[in-house]
Image (cartoon, each protein chain N blue to C red):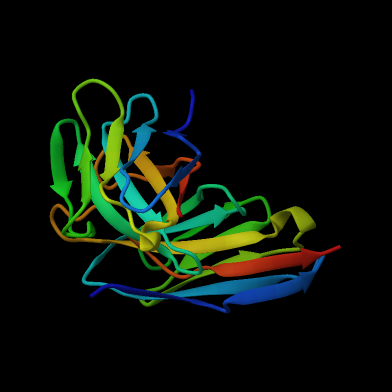
Length: 113
Length: 112
């Protein structure tokens, strides 16, 4: 049973470009969470999604960031017009049910030049 | 607002030297407290979930305990491969609240 998969593992973008991060949850998991880990900081919650629904986006920056989890395919975290402050490790986690343990993927390390 | 504080920030031990990591929390009704291990360049690896005061869980050289205000991760006779950052997180017991609130972590180094 494959774990949570994220791609790409490393992503380099120039200021002003768009970044798309993908997350495939574990088989049988219908709940997806995105977290961000800034350099020298702890993991911070961004957004919680179920299939086709955003449940909690209280941790998402108001502008430039969006997330989706379509009926088919992976969850996508999209960052428009990236800035240097967006450089961080972005982790996806999944769980089979609400309030169950969340299992994390290996992360996508975004570097903005 | 939920807060999770871990101490110490960093800890160096000799192989075989047992110790404990602390995680104190303030939350409006605890739904669950989670411990993860994170190696450099990797995602957090799930270790334990604790749900109520007095609960304990063990896995190999690790034992996690929970009180109403804090949790401890006890490491018995550690080995160099136990070196990692250990993360504590809480989940609030509010309807619909699923997010984990993480502490800053304790960076553990076990010297051979």
